[in-house]
Length: 109
Image: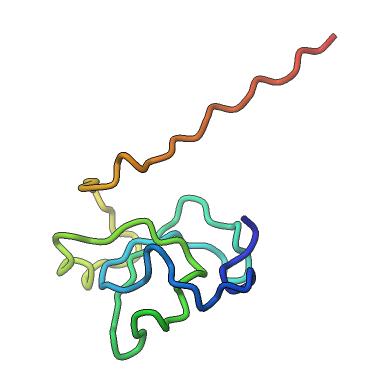
């Protein structure tokens, strides 16, 4: 936490989920604050001429957590303020890590 792969000296390392496809789903954050992501995310509208796989500037800087597998033709028409009413997880559920509930506060004496 607290740094990008580039900051950690691994900028050229291959990421597990790269920005390699139209419709890549990733966490949004402030550009220079790695721990600023919260509830905003974005679809990467991949253009191979501008962002060649393995060499684009987003790999290792933003967390990818999925790819669009159906309906990607709708992405080009999405605009700010549009609502996505439903989404479906099609694989990887077994890798989901649910955070532990917070510890109760210490008892005061």
